[in-house]
Length: 252
Image (cartoon, rainbow, N blue to C red; front, top):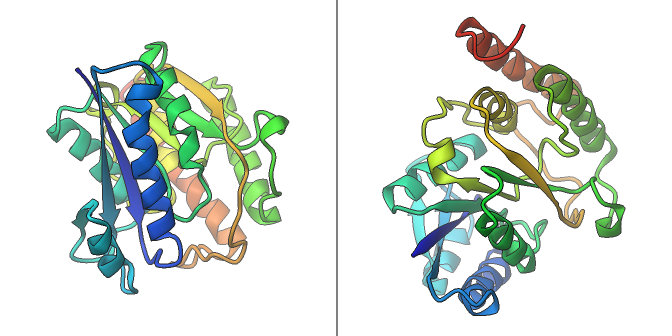
């Protein structure tokens, strides 16, 4: 039996949580039959990062298994919880998909199909790798920061990423279980990519549509200032590079 955990980080998503979780659950139920895999089991969980709007009540009405944090911990913490839950439940793979309607649940089958091909450890969505999937332009500052840091990561790690920040990903549980991750916030990808490269994980990108439903969405914690955000992300990457190079895990 191949087990896949689909984890949905949620924080104050009352406007989208019902439609998104309903569609994710429907797709998860359909995928084994669509792929002709009776030995495939998919489980959906919501990771509620202490939402303060109507989200908790809406999640309860959906009947989706929910893990609620007693306080707000951040996006990176939710990703680390995804890995912990996948390991605890004996899932072979875990897939992260956002709850703000920026990711298409219908693409879950492509992530699962690619995972089953067994040629990668990390399957990362890319909103910029295939213009056939272009839908809407990202806010200028977000795309600029993504492009800059993707370029810097590629140079430092000898990778070929086209989108360092897409949250739509599939991870082989055994491959990420031993990564020493501690980033709690939106800087998480900067630490993750460095540690993934140092561990020699095989990375593939999977084109996904570029969908922005709320260009004014806030990062919080001072990160709404793009200059501050870029500096913070760069510092996270620098700290991770220093840590792995000090252990001779990457070339200097």
